Image 1 (tube, rainbow, N blue to C red):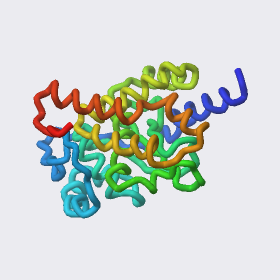
Image 2: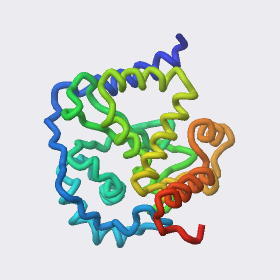
Image 3: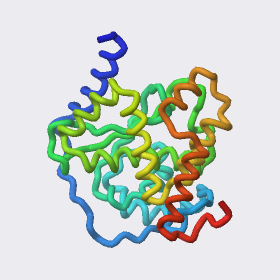
Image 4: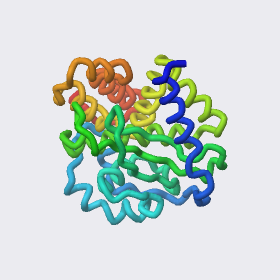
Amino acid sequence: MTPQFSTVLLYWLILLLSLGGCAKTVTFTDTPYENPLADYRYSCQSIDSLTVAAALPALEAQFGDQLEASAYRDKILAALSFYPNLRGIDIRLIRRRLRTSMAARPLGLGKRRNRRTYAVYVDDVSDKPADFRNASYSAQVGCFIHEFGHISYYVSRSNAQLATDGARYVTSQRFKNKYERIADRLAIQHGGGYYVYQYRRFTFEEAELPEAYLAFKRRNYTDQKKLLARHIAYLRENSVEKCVDY
């Protein structure tokens, strides 16, 4: 076992085992959900800060009690609007150095599924080749939509399954690719695929990444053209009459 592998594996285990005794019981919400940003689901139109600002009171009422975040709160709430299944789920924003822009992880392996807290880690504290804050507002929302695809996946997994996933993530490039594709697929199914596409376009076309970092991104993430094609294909397969110009 190499030192790098040991460090990554230890990182996963700490994330899964941390905060084991301080989570509150989650109340899953079954009440009808009126999405103030419904026009943007399954769409191909950019979302802007003024639109989100007008929707914030309704989004706070739906998601605010379980969200621990001050930075990027409007963008996070906009992204959560695509995931009504995450109402009642405790989510915490944590700022720290990462290899990539963001990461989502469960906090506290060993607790019952309805007592978990989930973290979205954001790297805005180090110099990076691609600073997500340089992306458009709409693309930044898309980055959070991708991370909530991961959390939507975690919510469906048992503790044993999460532990297995963590081990496979650090030992198998094939599983790592599958893991990212799952988040993209869930984002598309929840209607946010276009915004993930916008962030992926920023990463691969606009950010002028160094070749080594770009190769890392290409190893792990679906490129923007394939992602947009999958978004459009999902709309056509489900008779969603949006994005007719694509």
